[in-house]
Amino acid sequence: MCNGGGVDVLTVGETMVMVTPEAGARLVSDSRFLLRPGGAESNVAALLARLGHKAAWASALGVDPLGDLVLDDLQRHGVDTSLVRRDERRPTAVYFKDPTPDGTRVYYYRAGSAASAITTADIAHWTAQPARLVHVSGITAALSEEAREATRALVRGPGLVSFDVNHRPRLWHGDAPEVLRELAQDSDIVFVGRDEAEALWGTSDAESVRELLDRPRYLVVKDAAIEAVSFTPTGVHRAPSTKVDVVDVVGAGDAFAAGWLSGFLDDRDEVTRLRLGHYAAARVLESPSDFAELPPAADIIGKLG
Image (cartoon, rainbow, N blue to C red):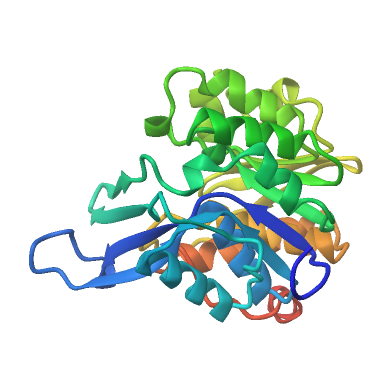
């Protein structure tokens, strides 16, 4: 499938170039900026690579310096990018972060991007030799009709599929509840925030989310600073969130998914998976970017005790 041979996880989805002021400052005319890749699925791939797994990321990028920046950075983190398609007609998307005392505002410039033209043919090519696990999010389904059909093909295809609901209201036009529930129900592993589930479907707690999403083999409901609850074949499991001084919340959900998936790939017990998820999320919450330099998973578990 990839130049490096079989991989543990293949992630699929758009990655943009993130423009963020240094040190969590506001977005103003005299700001100094950092340019970094920013995308849910590539975040998961990069964090899994840091945790010690073989991870690949597949998508489309423009033939432009921003696309080069994305590839160079992900390759530096050990992510296999050999499946990425370069599109000469469409650009690599960009988004800006504006940290404020009330939370980080995000401004997207992604209409007509290379990744919005991902097709079912791309999915067939990328999954021709399946990885142990494929990971995608609901963001991809919101990019275009083509990308939505591609996401459906991915979650309904062979092999184990992990799906992060990752609801982005500004990308949708009213049909998010139906489409995201459909995609979640067709997946094997599902991550969803308790608050986003409430906004989408009117659920009130983890148990009511499970009633609504009853088909996934594994369902993980994240309740922000309180806890994460997982519903698995071995029962219901809970782990309290790690308390940290939050710099920026963007990317924490991706980090949680990477930590949990790392524990899943290593066949660790469910509570350890949840604790790995919390650890990875906490490191990103303490960072002004949506990425953190994590040690190998075995070293983290040694710290967790």
